[in-house]
Length: 322
Image 1 (cartoon, helix red, strand yellow):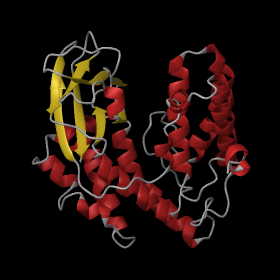
Image 2: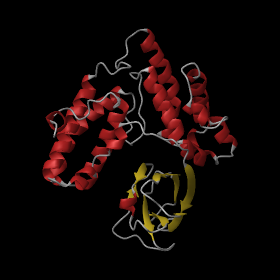
Image 3: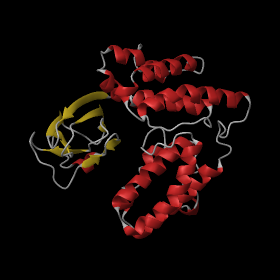
Image 4: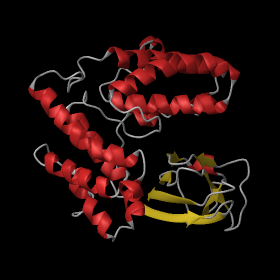
């Protein structure tokens, strides 16, 4: 039976959807709707942009890229979760920036491996966030923005969340009992966006879903450590990132490690295959989870990367599970 509450209620009223995840999801959707350049989206974009800016400001980080955002309004548990997720997902990016997984720079961030962060407790957090701030300050140039600032801000976010907890003044409770006005307004704007996009493309789930990555709203299970590949591609060049068979269980996360070039990921039957109508374009300094169905021939074994820039070389990081 179709549930009216699911269809017409608040799609984003879920205990696992934190303000940070909501802001990330909303920014990602806004970016995609804007990039589509569809005149029918103008009122949707206008409806979403203003409340999202207010929520991002409240979270203490107005960076508009799809990254983990944080602020003093977060609870202890939320700061810890955000910290763990960032240190896990950005491990490859940090390693690439500071000289590789065996470099002295990497060891300043991960002296005991990234597993130390995945099991971090509240007692250990002061030491860990202080270490990361010191390392991020030392390698700020190599890391670039916004990553360096995000890493340094964890110490402040942790201290603020501890103070808020001790004074029982947290804006967002550990059990999500209350929501800020800014968060509610973004939820309502997203509901408006989802229903209006559905009205523009009635019955076309694939088209509608292309603007909304709902996986960003929930914590992702990572039972196994990813294998990480990285490389550099000259302007307008094509490189083989990986040559192997893929299945629906394969998880691929692709990151562009430059601020001035976009990369196109696609599958090909040969090492020199040219891109066709399929493929996933990953913007400069962004990450995307790649779906096999979007990359091209699902039986092809060459995962190829094309540098879309006519001017700049580009680096990338590919995380593979399964």
